Every structure is written in C-alpha cells, then in structure tokens.
Amino acid sequence: MKKIIIITSVFLLISPFKLVKGQAAGNVKYNETIRYQKQNKSPITDAVFTNDAVMIFEVNALKNVKADSYVAIFNITQLGETAESVDSILNIRYNKFVSEAIKESIVADDIFLDMISLVPVYEYEVEKKLFSKTYNEVPKGFELQKNLHIRFTKGKILDKIVTIAAKNEIYDLVKVEYIAKEVESVYDELRDKSVKLLTKKLTSFNKLGIKLDTVYHIISEKSTITYPISRYSSYQAFSRSSIDAIEKKRIKSKKSDKNETLVTSYPQTVKQVRESNTLYYNQIPYDNYDIVINPEILEPEIQFSYNLKIKYIIKKPDKKIEKHFLHLTPEGNLKTLDVK
Image (cartoon, rainbow, N blue to C red; front, side, top):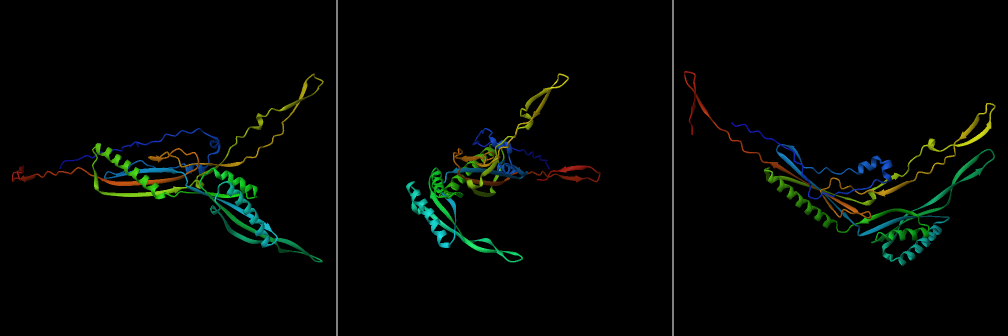
C-alpha cells in the first residue's frame, strides 16, 4: 500500500469588492460605550476548513435603501375639567395643525389621529375633623391622549412638520418610521450578486487544483432588515479640566516686621457646565461585508443584510492498493508469486 500524505492549507480570499472608508474621529471618541462597541460587530466572512474533507464559503452583502415614505408619530396630551372639554380643546389643536400642514403640501388623507386613552385625574382633598385629618382622592378632571400620525415622502419635510406641531403645542415626537416598498426586489439583487461572487470564488479554487464535489453540497441563507431607529447611539461630548490648572488670584498684604511680603491666595469660583446627552446615527459598519450597494449615506436609510453560505465536500485522491502474494517455502524463504 502506498502511503499518501495530504497537506491542507488555509487560503485567504480577497474579495473583488472591498470598500475602503475613512472617518475622522469625532467627539464620540471621548466615551465609547459598550453599546457602541457591540453595534460595531459584523459577521465574519472568511471561508474556513472545518476539517480536511469539508469546505465552507460565505458571502455577506448589504444594501442601503432610501425610504419610499415616512410616518412621524406625535403624542398629544390634553387636560380639562370634563371629558367634553378635553376632547374639544384637543380637536381645536389638531384641526389647526391639519390646516397648516395642508399648506405645506401634506395631503389630508396622510394625517390620522389615533385614540389612546381618556382617564380621570384625581387630587387629594383634606377632610377636617375635630381630632384628625383624612385625605380622600376626588376626581378633578380628565386626561386625554391621542397620537398624531403623519405620512410624507420627503425626509426634509419633517422639519416643517415639527415646527407646525410646536406652534400648536404638540412637542412629543414619539418616533419616525421608515417604509420600503420593494423589499423582495432588494433581496433578489443581493442574492444574485452573492451567487455571482461565490461562483467567482469557486473558479479561483479550481485553479488552485482543489476539486470540490459539485454533486453534494448544502446551501443556507439568512436576511435581515435594520431600520434607523435601532441604529442611534447616545454619547456625551465633554472634556473635564483640572481645577488645579485654574490660575489663582493673589492678594498682597502688609509687610511684616522682617520686611517680608505676606501673600494670601484663594481659588476662583468654578461653575460646572451641564453635561447634555445627545444621539447620532450609527450605521452598520462595512468592515466585513463582501458586497455593499449604495455605500454612501447622507441621511439615515434602511439597511438590508443578506448572508449566503455553501458547504462543499473536498474530493480526495483515490488510494491505489498494490497486492503482493508471498510464498513461504519449507526452507523458510519468502518468494513473491506472480499472480495476475
């Protein structure tokens, strides 16, 4: 039997598409949080050997898609003495908002008022007695909450909507939803490009002399949608200064008997600036994606991710076994027999 030595090696494939994106460090570098670090993790895309007989190829693709439409949701809260009065006052605010929004080319059918709750508001009333006081809850009015939904197609209109809402005492912007219509076509494009890249990788491996079993293989895929609302991170932009670095004010006093000048010093009053929290859009990084479609993002967009894996069986060379028949003679000698 001939001994066959199989040497396996790990090959590093360089994707034909590799987006190089530089970024200047901003204030976020002052306090990178755990949440920020976790969000920056991307799937590993290197093809690896699980053993000497199996090889797995993987492609990760991503496409940034601008929303076809948006829905902004505002919360409106109104207090009043009666249920009728709170509903009437809230409707006045709502109708003023609608009339001004229509002037900004927003269609009336794209505005909807969603009823949330109508609950009584209680206060404590003191019941005075001769030797004690009793506090009783009594209804003093009603609280009405409704959500205002506005649909629009251009992201820049949101600024005007917020301004109109503020004029009518509507301040609570709950969230903005991003809507994409052609979801299926986006995944079709990602799948086609991923298959094309996988085919190119397989062709490269065939040139290296690695024979893959094209009959038996397993394919798996996974897709996800990431909306902008889940990609906002918070940070505080500040840098503390040392109080010791503040120049101290010095006041000279009278000279002593020894002709020495006595100096008295005291620190200036230090007022700490309030550290405000803010948010920024932190898109999915492209570090480990093989394919990125529409990589440049100016405004927050919907990010479609697609992962394709394929597992192949590596064909091993056939082992040729040579058979030899030996004859042991009575004299104790071994002779090779020619057997065809």
